[in-house]
Length: 218
Image 1 (cartoon, one colour):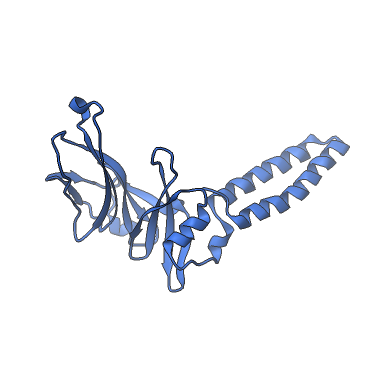
Image 2 (tube, one colour):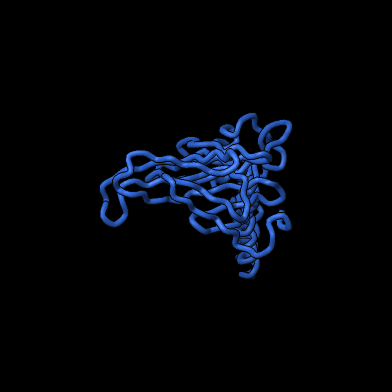
């Protein structure tokens, strides 16, 4: 994730005392001081890279505004998956259609940033299903399904009124081995242990990773 403006300012300010500590270590010939300063600065940088300080108080009116602020180097929003308590913004990096994601919490005042570390994998069968910790929201993540080469259209359906966003790519690469139509899916879903996604009449299941019930985790 790109560093936010406030995080950059904090790192810039911290660089001054850290540089002074390195200078002192050279004068007094105590290399451990310089090493400690460098290690501390790296740890702070890693922590700030994963969590923008503005997230504690900054609120945005739209998911697009929040995602654009925390990920300024992306080419734009591809899709917004609206959950009950959260939303997941799918962004494009522009490199071979590579995507990154921005997780936001819905509040009365607008949208606030949430760390992607809040996403807990629930299922990796036929794709990835993630639960947003301390919420009732589940998201289906980026999985490519290869369809038969003669497929001229795609019919995709979730369960319980789920809204699934999907991209269709048609090509002629190794048609005999993979087919020539691929479908990549994202969605906000009402997940259960017997959840099924149907693509062109074929069902794909998403069994949970853990034996404990989902209600206990939630």
